[in-house]
Length: 141
Length: 396
Image 1 (cartoon, rainbow over the protein chains, first blue to last red):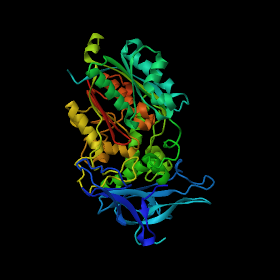
Image 2 (spheres, helix red, strand yellow):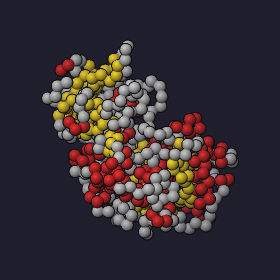
Image 3 (cartoon, rainbow over the protein chains, first blue to last red):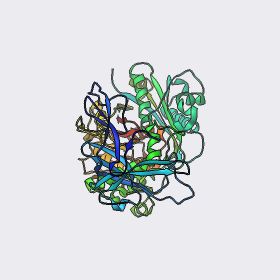
Image 4 (spheres, rainbow over the protein chains, first blue to last red):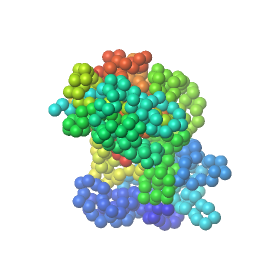
């Protein structure tokens, strides 16, 4: 669905951004055309993996089924999904993502450490759509 | 040349879920504004339509749509879209035409017929559209972002869900006094706490509904106003339409991530703060001069954030300002005397115009039971998707 946003498996799983070769600005989702720093004349945009761990900036959840184009099975009861905004220290960026399955708002606090893990967004008989999840460190699926 | 324009007329169609076409609401609001101004539609040299994306093709060309419905009379026409800032951009376009001499008197109209439930992006498979992606990849509705801001305030400033509920209690109290509001019932903190959680920690009554509604204003040069017999009209002294400064480090709709601050330190003020500052600078007034403020309370917690962004109190002290009753009717700086979005719900292109209507009525002393005593200076504030600033300062 979205190409080149993440890569790898297990402990090697990483979000992928791009970095401007001239000013070192980092972009996620990846910016492949022009550096968006207005003070930068622009350099090549190079793919970089983002930090695996970060700290919770804030979090919330969706207690009601989100509308399309989010895909969920209307036959099944809606299972509230937590969303976590995570501050990555090295990149000085905040990245939003779904929490790993089973992680609820009750498990979270602002400032706690989380790590990025591979996840499944949706699957049907033909396709599995993969994504990234944030999961508190020290918690195993 | 003065930088001010006169607000000669203001009008609304009552907000609600009426199930009719947006054109009907816009035309009703326009006719009300013309009547209020004491002008005939044929006196209007220019019409500006605030676009609705939900109104189909006529909604994208709202200026001409309203002009046709009112009866073609040859006026100059403009249509503008800037999501929630649409109305402010329409007012700004009208002001620019008046100050440049392109038009003497301009009718600004916005109306919407919003669907029930969450706003959602346009259809189709569109992975190059950030608004589509946030729904498809994250299921991140607008309330999700409001929930993130609310939780962040709780963690950083110690705000509580009851603080947020008090915003609803206050706004519902004022909305009950406003005949144009959709919700006219007072609400208790217990009722807020008993409503379903939508996006933790926010509940149904913390979050604004989607509505049908329309609003319109008639703006003119001060010279036209004088000739028309209005020597002391409400005047618009500033319209803020600024964009953010890189890096924008507060996660905002519809983005999946913030700008990175790794190469450039973040600006000293956030985007929302810069919206207000630009308006204050243009108007030559400060927060201490305000009689009232109309802000986008998309959620209760967001209203508290605006207190700080507008400089009504220091950072982190929004909840205290609320608890002290300063933002209620009779307080030092009443906020959302109209009842706000809590009482109206969102009719996107109309709302920023509706805010200006409320400022006009308040500054004229015509706001009835919700009148802010002795109102002289008012600000409206909101922001549009993709970094559209929006604030208007009106004076009397």
